[in-house]
Amino acid sequence: MLGAAVALNVGWIILNWRRLAPMLIGIPFFALLIAGVVLNTIFLVREVRRNERHDSFLNAVTHELKTPITSIRLYLETLQRRDLPEAKRREFYGMMLQDTEWLLATVEQVLKAGELGQRTRNQVRRPVDMQGLVIQCIDRTRARHHLDEGAIVFEQADLSTPMMVRGNREELESVVLNLLNNSVKYSPKTVEIRVNLSVRNEAWVVLTVTDRGIGIPASQLKRIFKRFYRVPARNVLKTKGTGLGLFIVRSIARQHGGDAFAESPGEGRGATVSVQLPRVLRPALKEQEQKAE
Image (cartoon, rainbow, N blue to C red):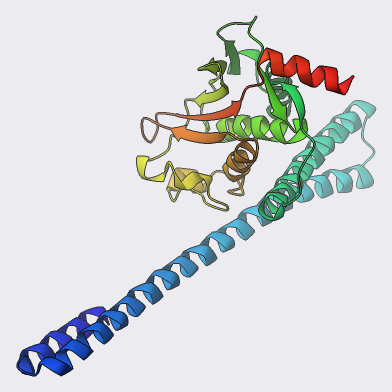
């Protein structure tokens, strides 16, 4: 359409180049017509891509919900139909409990994404020790995915340096858990994750999570933080996920005055996701503690 419009207008100008008044009137209208066609095309493409992301999200969430429900139902039917030894029954109960935790985590992630998209109210924020929070989240991730202690290694340059930020502990916990779960999820062969906590310029607490998984193409590094977005690669699409984890991470980080970034040497070479948050300095921390008292 754009090419046809340009061709017709150029031909009209050539035929009427001596008639100044029609040309002066026609050229602005032609520019408006072209701008309208371009804008309409842009909005149409965006809508198509948004619909594709929504469809992909629905398929992913359906799969994430259906898998644990099917597993729980299978265990329950087995317990109902057969007289199993007590040890086997306890094993089944443990497996069903893990499936319910998986189910609950998926539901909480979807609800959290909805809350972040609609949140307008102010929240009460208190000093949070990021070192203790990160260690707790690492332990939970190891237990959830049945990982050895060496699969996730925690590093901190200076253990004596306070790593305090002011925020909502539950939301910051969601940030760390999403980063760790993403790294485990996209490390299909061997889980080797390094978690680093450091202070940058005395003003920021920086958390970095580095894995040796499937990596991220350079063209996708900014898009992966969008809601419902998943990298369009075959090895990524085979991995379970809703496309909400990194969206939640960046949204919470920005609501706390920080930000989130991603780096990767390329596909198959792992990735690093960093979150920086404003640090609570010691004078400010003491003042807050006095006010709390």
